[in-house]
Amino acid sequence: MKKAKVSVRGLVKRFGTTTAADNIDLDIEDGEFLTLLGSSGCGKTTLMRIIAGFETADAGTVTIDGRDVTHLPPRQRRLGMVFQQYSLFPHMTVGENIGYGLRAQRAPEPDIEKRVTEMLALVQLPDLRDRKPGQLSGGQQQRVALARALATRPSVLMLDEPLGALDLKLRRQLQAELKRIHRETGTTFLFVTHDQEEALYLSDRVAVMRGGKIEQLASPQDIYLQPVNEFVADFVGDVAFIDGIHDPGLRVVILPQGSAIPARLALPAGPVRLAVRPENVKIASPGADTVPGVVIQVAHQTGTTIYNVRLASGQEVKVRSLGLAGGVDSPGQAVHLSFADCHLAFGT
Ligand SMILES: Nc1ncnc2c1ncn2[C@@H]1O[C@H](COP(=O)(O)OP(=O)(O)O)[C@@H](O)[C@H]1O
Ligand SMILES: [Mg+2]
Image: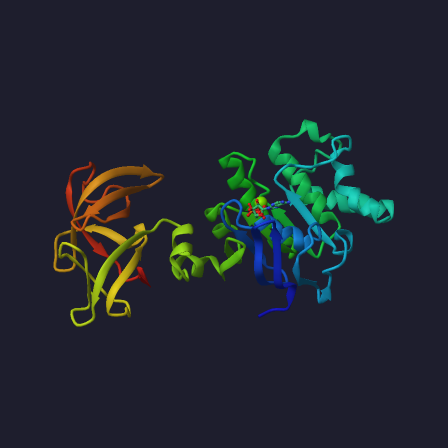
């Protein structure tokens, strides 16, 4: 593991009876893009605000660049912040907004001008230096907020749902921009979102949070392919849970009503719960390894078709197929499903 840029140890924060941070340990590596992912109220903002120094923890420590900053005010922590609401100074021009932090640090004026020009190029707004925030679109304001936060070369850039107020297309565009800016600046990014797709797309590592705790901290691939529990499997990506009985002799998972899914994973004998991703089920010709079902819904996404299929056991799975699978296009059709060997299993 690379050197930790930020280390959080034993962090606890309570608001009345709510535990917003429940004994959190976290290391953020130098230069990485780490995302806190979880639904509203799980403690993402609280954790970020404690690291930034805007909130005081009940217990625990925060170390940045090897220095214990637990009791230091925000301005002594060398952090940059970008929030969902644009929070630019409305009476200042774009250039003045971007130069604000450097001016507050009493940097020489020519250095400030040079840095502002660099930052405008970085966020691809070279011509808007003299505009006021009110004359910018939401996406442009967020680019300026990003430029302002990066201008002082912060040790860590913290972004709390920065794209939350933008429409989908603009959000996608700015996600790509954020990834490029992260790569080009080499700055450590701590990002917060409740959008799992956004988290997987952007991050080097994702911390999936629930109830003030980190459930899993891993690469996007591992979070998706090797979730540690049902909560993470369900939160990140589409999944259907299928309960059955594993028979190690026959190497199958027997479903209620008698059909069986081949068990290619090392499973415990007895009751198991399979977590099945839509891309790991196919509509197939009937065979020894297939499970019969009935299509109950057909929906189209860009380039793919999603089938909801009810198995004879009554359990439902989703099937993702490129285009239409073998002409299956309407509810009520009887189909056979084959299951890939990469589905996940949890004890019950
Ligand atoms: N200042 C506060 N006073 C009381 N409760 C708070 C305060 N800030 C956060 N909370 C509570 O702490 C929990 C975590 O909140 P927050 O960190 O904002 O979650 P998230 O950013 O993941 O949506 C929530 O239950 C929230 O209501
Ligand atoms: Mg929040």
